[in-house]
Length: 115
Ligand SMILES: [Zn+2]
Image (cartoon, rainbow, N blue to C red; front, side, top):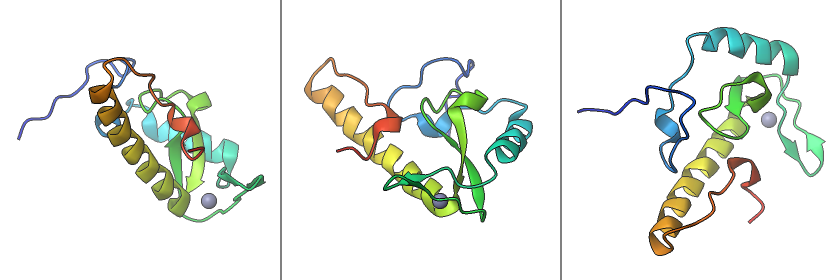
């Protein structure tokens, strides 16, 4: 079983390959920084922040390969799972859209949920 690993984390990730985007060596430190900054789940639903302080995980707001602190936020596990599944679905959807029309606008992961 061979797996292609991207050499440069700054390379744009193709639709569907978000799962394999490598993490920087200082990832644990970044996780700590995001936790210190956000403290609670940042998920916004119906205009209100979730605010849960349990089972918190770091989520990529936009580009999954962009590990900049500005692209990271804290989400509780249920919301992170919900979002990860949405990204997966969006990846599959984008893949098929790409096959239908050769040129397609890449769906921004941050906009998922508006459909
Ligand atoms: Zn939450």
